[in-house]
Length: 266
Ligand SMILES: [Fe+2]
Image 1 (cartoon, rainbow, N blue to C red):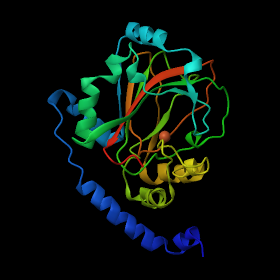
Image 2 (image 1 turned 45 degrees about the vertical axis):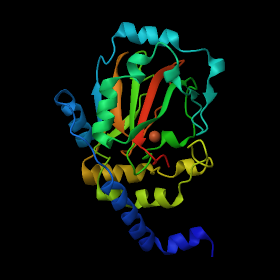
Image 3 (image 1 turned 30 degrees about the horizontal axis):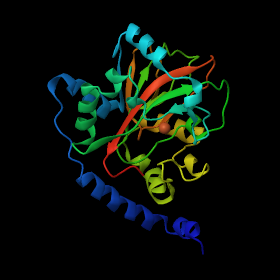
Image 4 (image 1 turned 90 degrees about the vertical axis):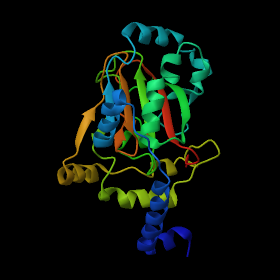
């Protein structure tokens, strides 16, 4: 009997083991009270799974940042099959400090995840492949069962043609998540760079459309299409279900920062 067969037969025990791991993880989470001026944002993320901050930077600042994006040769293609280009460690570049060094964002991440929060990836994402792409991010999925807070800053207007993310409002919590969380815990493996250890594994965490429709019906969950003008900031808990949409224009460029609880990158 191989490992996967045993896991399928002992799903109940696997879930119990996972529940104990989850209990231990959350018993070590020590969130802090957010400053008064951030409480609304933190409460909104706790309630809906995301918050939108319009005009996080001005349109002029967003345009200046867009002009600072390096040329394509310094980007690498995503290893997760979505055809996007990434510039890693973008916080080392001048021109993006208002985002990557933002006290406000750091304080929100600390309030949501705890004092031991760390920024795991700070990057520029450049989407340029139009049309349909077969990739895990095109399906509704949860990234993980542990805390993972992501922030997207739009460097130009993002409308329906600019591949806006869809977030299923309120899907970051609920007992219905448990089977998938246990599956991720048991099956998902990362390589030494923190990405899925194989292209197939990247699909763990994805749901079929009929399953998502059932969740919407049963739990009253609703899609939110995250469009917004240049300078808009989207902060979301990527435990909640989300998916990418099709690019219908030449490109989309945005800044990404995301945070986890230290020592929990897998
Ligand atoms: Fe994701």
